[in-house]
Image (tube, rainbow, N blue to C red; front, side):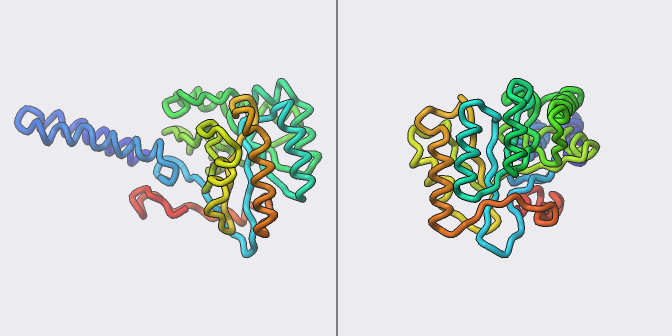
Length: 265
């Protein structure tokens, strides 16, 4: 992260120095570092700002089903029934405000043998990437406190829409959290039918994949829960199991300076 900041500042200083005589060079020096920073903020596979796990290690036909944006009083109980029917385990990345509104649902998730993970307190989708260190700290700490009240201490975190923040790496490290992304997702809000979501989520299945799906009112009614049911059925048909990986199954993503931030996972 600090190297990115240094490169950006150095580019701005160099642009100011050469600007009077080399305006074209100055423009490049000014804007190219901004593009590099934007790449690491918004591109999922970039690892320069914070390590984002996108796969896990497994020797079997196993995938990790993750469900964001709950808990939801309509969807969560139905999803738990589906998971039980398929003998599947999942991780629910929950929003603190929704946990506070529906605490019994978090207890039901844990009682059913699933993992509860951190998805911020308020889900600030539009502003998370540019939030101040204090705001990032509040989102993490308030979410942790909300979950602690229900007896949950998460170790895994997913930012809204996978967007990163310059201060996120340090904030997660001091709180004992790791960042989990995904390797396949359904993009439920962009499609009008569950079949498209199911196809998109499962079309490139491979062992160790992390699948991202959503619950709650932001998902269109024709897709809510139905797509998760279809994905579970497709996984069953193709011989895949849904598991929650152990910490040892999550390899350290490649250091960004080894591959200019592209990452291998």
